Length: 559
Image 1: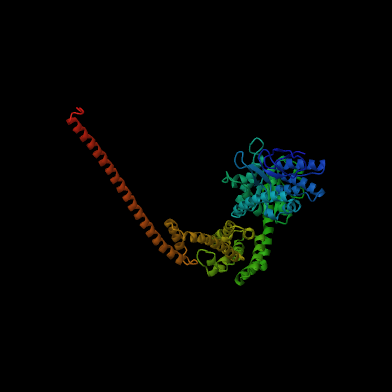
Image 2: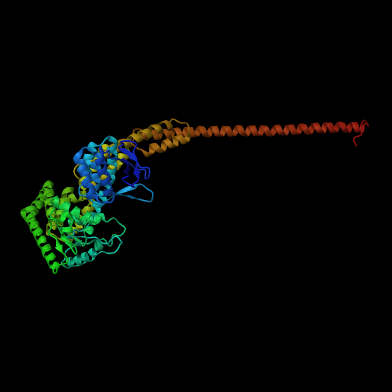
């Protein structure tokens, strides 16, 4: 059976029933399904086509069908996870490795995902290693999305629609959605409408902002004029995720809004929902009346939650420093009223173990406030927003995840570099839980490494201290002086200095004797040369004198 690369779509041709293969086109090492029958192989192939076309719900349904027959198929669990997160692999740069992008952000970490855990449970060692590596990448992207989305202001209503048709022209759906957006904003509702809301987000990933809006919006209005528009990939991606939140218990409402089509052409998932015909006279009034009723019902639920003493219990927990009570109450309040800044601030303070005054100094908060709780209870929006921003810079919303990663890094650390990286993970946690104790443990490990390295350097320079080479002695002195009080470094430095004086004196004496010897040899060589010159000159003079005598006697005629 041939397969397609998850990343680039290239054809993969395994030799047999291999579970691991490397793509010849993009070079990515990846896992493969091993279907036991032609029927399962056909389901895999069809699901792969849906997943590659970003029709994740359709693909997920087929993977679930496969798992109904074989609940131990690790690869099928992994592919189901990719669909849950809407993973699409794109090129970071031309020809480079494909990297995952998330199109369906999930509130639960990929490491806590049921499909991921099942994939690891039934995978062999090599498969599991690949799943873990890819999950790490997805987790990093997930954190980035959460970091952006947590900073976004909540929305009341989310408008879901198809902006352009296959030719890139604006759809009638977009025009109708614009009218609804203007109608609702005039009523002071905060509305997510991609045409307007994402207008200043050109060049960045939209998913963090879409995810934040889906999470906060109490109502979604799905607008469409054709069956295929409701089922368009990105439109379905939004309303199916919203429906999934409703099924999981979220207090949200989805309102289908259609025009120029039969209501029976709406997606079958909308069959139980009350739809609005945008072609009917007075639909605006009907829509507004329905939305007001929904928000009134939700407000009543909020009032029940907040009026049930949760706020009072939360503040009492703050005074008693019973952080578990504060967290429990704050979580319940935020679930009922996500925009309640008092609960959000108290939850952060509880995570950091802060009541007021000196507690705040530990976290280097600007200034100390002895009346902190009173200010929070006052409900001053400007003050609460400012304090929340300050707390966000100190301790992230996902502090438990950060803490868990830091602890895991500590237990896996082996080298000094590992402990240095681990220290960086714990630094922002300060006194959160037992982070201070972990930091002390890390520092002890680093101190041991430093002492071991210092001892090795000490032994090295101890040997240099025995040398007769002035340069070695000077290096030893410099080291011993750099570690005053360490072992006998002070006395060693003094001994090296004394030895250096002696060595330099000996060296100076040897140098002078050598110079003297060279001078003597030079003089001797000069005097020898002069003597030879004199001898030659004298010998020449004698010969000349003899010849002169012979000439005078007439024996020879020189001239």
